[in-house]
Image 1 (tube, rainbow, N blue to C red):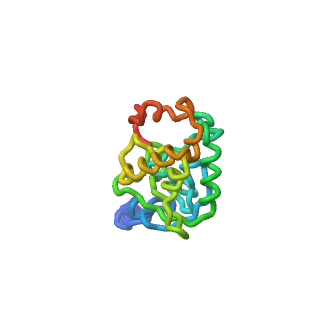
Image 2: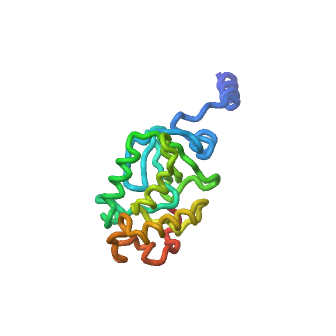
Image 3: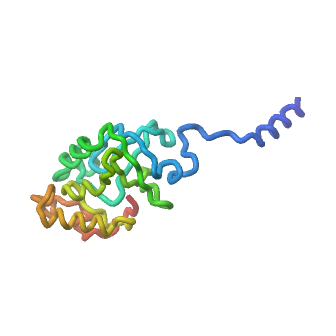
Length: 191
């Protein structure tokens, strides 16, 4: 019996088991970059869930790279000016839609383990992150460098100059704390 147990352990050690389906294969970049998925839930203006399992979850949570929409009711920070409108815009544009993800190699997850991505609407090719900024539904995230930082800042500046969306009435005290500090990195660190 001892020989059978040892032989079994040796054989099991040599057999490579595929990871469970809920585990990423080949890393986030290989698994998500350039691929098309369906948005199954809009959490708020800058966070959505797509139809593919992620670790122990039934869906993958995406945090949009380079933008920050105002918080909505139920957020730990409380509802902010324009939060409901930004979220409603995201629902109108993304809910149930097919999207293509663009990731930044080597920087695919944020502080809360959400996947960081630029989200493109499959049917039009439009980047939703840019749509949020152009429509005045988001702030250009300046705390964390990313490949589209300058473009996003320019889109926000144009919306601000034109009084589009939240820029038509937001006051400094209604802006996120990081923005009131001048867009500097918060002590908490990452997205």
